Image 1 (cartoon, helix red, strand yellow):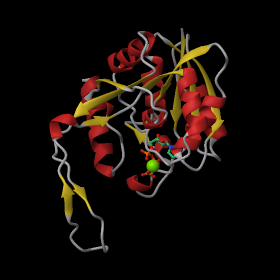
Image 2 (cartoon, helix red, strand yellow):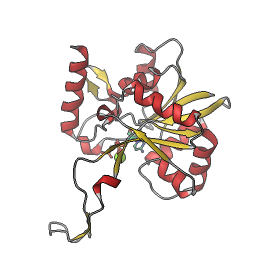
Image 3 (cartoon, protein in one colour):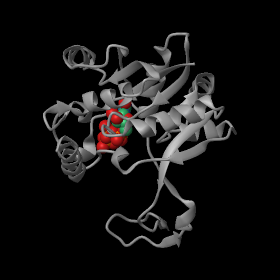
Image 4 (cartoon, protein in one colour):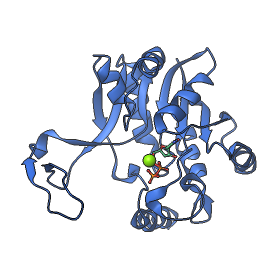
Length: 234
Ligand code: CTP
Ligand code: MG
């Protein structure tokens, strides 16, 4: 079983505020994308990393990968991304060589995921799951609301039982043909790949995620990411 990781990195990072595309922002001096690529390459099972670059930034990304050390065993490719995350992942899938049978999809915005989490996802796919997501229980209670006028208080519709909810991370792992079929079939705008497999009526399973696999989304997340890196070096 040959495994590749597709890393969607083509987003702007609007919620992070003005600046370079999010994946190219530095964390303790190294671009977030490089941390994410190294996190995938840290798994001995991953033989290829496909980076989906900002549409006008493929050259710059190729250059970054050429000039930052990766393990000898890891090949990499760079392809330009699309308008939505879903488009970007599909463009990454189209670049995979035939020999790949297991695919990870990993957000460039989760640069610090530990290798044990990556390996647990791969192992679950190799054990026969079609789709695997790492996830954690929620700390906050979640309310469903009825969005109304901007600035007005929103009525609460329901409170789902927290113990049954999970906050989903990446890398998500897939049997290759299942993920390709999901991307060829499902057209709705979705925020993760596993939900597309669910829409095909197929089983998705959860394995334990990790706190350090959090997504860098807002400015405070940059502070946390740099603190985690500093702690690792200490
Ligand atoms: N992504 C992508 N192509 C897009 C949009 C998003 O490859 N057209 C990637 C991002 O680069 C990121 C991952 O999908 O690695 C998760 O998306 P998110 O955290 O939402 O990143 P952004 O879309 O860049 O951020 P924002 O939504 O705040 O603009
Ligand atoms: Mg986004």
